[in-house]
Length: 293
Length: 158
Image (cartoon, rainbow over all chains, first blue to last red; front, side):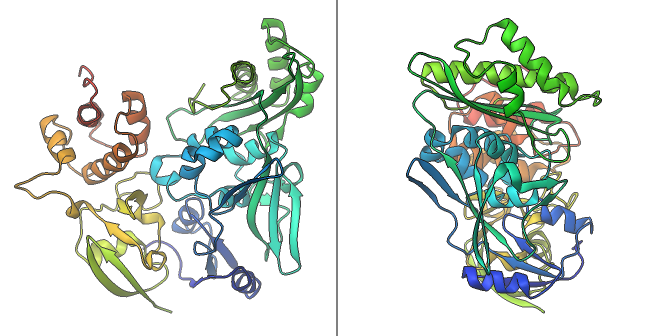
């Protein structure tokens, strides 16, 4: 028994969870607990009250109006295996498969990963690449926050202390959608040194008409690479030949300039993910493989 | 404040009073004497405390016992007997997949969960699934061989 003592309440209704969160300045939400409990075991986190949200009806996957809406209690293992997620949001399925180990993925949740905001985490970067929306519920109502604005810094988000992430929303993968998440970790399942998510959409003529990209493990939040890839000429390209891959890699690497461990790595991962994304968009097979670079 | 928790441990209904900070690992070892779940790092890094909750492998050091209300918990003690080993235990025996035994119960449970979902897992997938369980005897080759044998894979040459 390593954590410091704390009080515990299990919420069965959203209103109860929000009230409990507001009742104590040192209250903390527990969902999967795969990041929080290690911090508590090391006594780096000492919440006075844990509000357990696992009984809330938020383990949901819905597709409507061309959006995939995922409840915050969807566990990584479900993102990885759920047929709807694999088809409609293949980048999230691929990213989830790269998180930790099976026992971690059996417990860890989408909302937990987003709210914890570890800069090395895969799902926040995937959400930024997808230009997704984080749905936060507070006592004043629901806020829809762009993933691009949600992450503020290391383990810090724009979420108020008494707000709860209840879900995320991403666009449904179109017909000629290609997504890829590449990362490098010294050992399978370890925190990645860096990772890059790329998602593109081609028109009927095979021209890239939409793109998103983000890196994890670099900087204190996910690094949005949308502009970098756009400026490098990926938008409007119909092929990713060596020269486009090389110039894009160089541009992406500059976002990690000064970080000797990551500068080249980010470039390589970006090129690899971009190459995958084009191949998958063309082949009509947008499903990820979950393999590391 | 202590909380009353009703759950199932190795097929039997159980009821305990637990402090919120008692982990499932603390409870299965100290209240139920199920010492097959091993306390290694106690912060989620080593995997030695793996048990099944509702059939899924989880780290029992990262789950508070109070969170197990209504859940079904299985430790290694629920699998096989010395006279009739579980097929995974038999495979571990055949392939010399254990040395000191500290990581073994968790390795076996992780492998059982994995093959339940991917009965024909490849060696690469098996290695990735077991990567979260540390064996400090470094006996990985035998462990991978054992799990491969049940996935219908030719054991690697070791």
